[in-house]
Length: 69
Image (cartoon, rainbow, N blue to C red; front, side, top):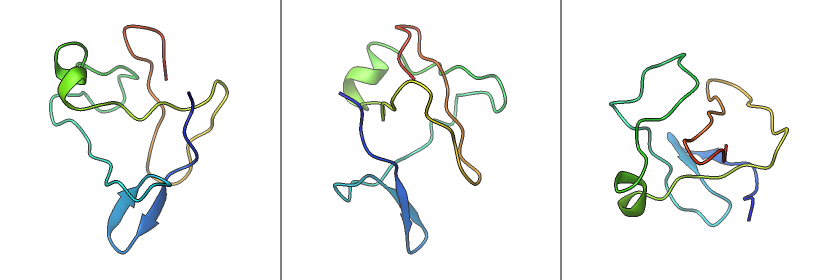
């Protein structure tokens, strides 16, 4: 299920439910891919966006190994 657009609250990026969103230090900026796949993504659930979602500001949308974005 796709989640709503995240928002900035104070200095944190949060989900609509108010959960803090994090970046993964091992991901390579500009690569368009994440290296946090299973089992990593089992511990740190990814924030899934709808097909066609467009990033705003300094965030980006990446494609995961399973094809989700």
